[in-house]
Length: 318
Ligand code: HPA
Ligand code: ZN
Image 1: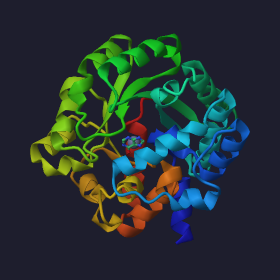
Image 2: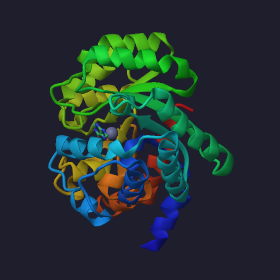
Image 3: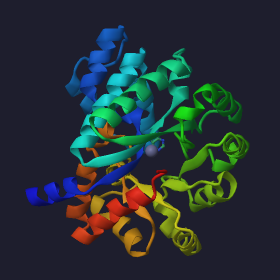
Image 4: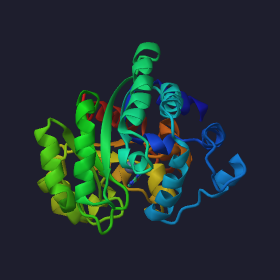
């Protein structure tokens, strides 16, 4: 058992689907609430952990946006990112592409500069001290309007050199990729690559839209693609990577049991999949734990584990 954990850790790997706000551990949330004098509806780490019982994506997002309210100063964003990077090092991650949600913070009066400077300083330190390389992906919150996404894109332009791609996250159903076609076009014109969450809870049509209207280089989640044979063939043929997040899918009830997850099926179909942790502080495990649980519950072979890691590197924006 422990052997396989060591084996997993020893494989060089990239993480391509990680929301930095989702790596906010209850301990740090408590500490920052005190440091910044922010009221949170919890009195202890245990109370926070007890609230992490989700029935779907929205029930998680409600708690996740509430938790992010403790992030105020640049050093809060630095501490948050640095804690994640130390855990990444521990899991054998050599490269990470991190999502951040500027609107979660700018809508509370925190400046874009505060957010990106705190995160970026931790990334620079990680390159030097941990030998971990990284890219940043700025996500638009899809429950907000196109106009608000355009304003966020505008705000990001002075920091364009720090951001590799734009993405799309938050409440999926009812907010199709087509809603953001124009703002993604503008982002591409500014030189950003594009990715989008699609086919987590939303239908396969959203995956087609992300490909056809947003010109995405990767699909985030995408696990519902196996409902559409034509789509699977297309994804295989075009080698479009899918950033799968098994423990997230379990916690948000996309699957009832990890044994039911289609990761192995997708791998065997020749889809370009890899494993990611999504919001590890909320979903019960960082990248190594995602690998280990999948190994156990899906009877993955060592070759499967190696293939997942190879896919993570080849699907990266390096
Ligand atoms: N889906 C959509 N939005 C998100 C997620 C997710 O898995 N995690 C953080 N924001
Ligand atoms: Zn996600």
